[in-house]
Image (cartoon, rainbow, N blue to C red; front, top):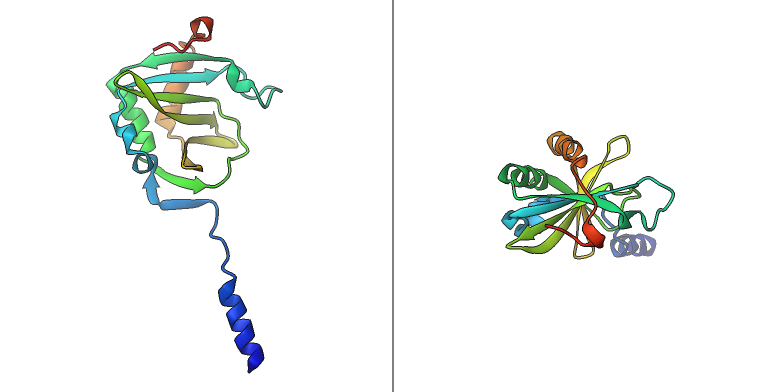
Length: 161
């Protein structure tokens, strides 16, 4: 009888950690950071060589294109309205670029993307030490592929808008 009591209490005391890759209570990235609803312009950054040998500094070299188009902003917000998976650790995937999100002329959030759909096909947000991943929508991926050739290098390394 004593054995059963000890065994039962030891089971209660060792709670297992919930799965790291869980849908965050049906939350979306827009739910996690509601400021993203106020985006009025975007700078879309494309890393020049995201899959090259330099795994640490590949994000230093990029091209970018900016938009204030309401259709493009709605497309991003549609993407951010998809359910997100909350993770404690960064996925072992290199990003291909990012969105710098602006409101009233000031950058306030960055959303990252990867379109390598054989292994890394998502957008994600970093917030409060967690990573929130959402599978990339085909419409967003298609649009990004379309505008990628329009992106240019910033003058003297400056961010342009």
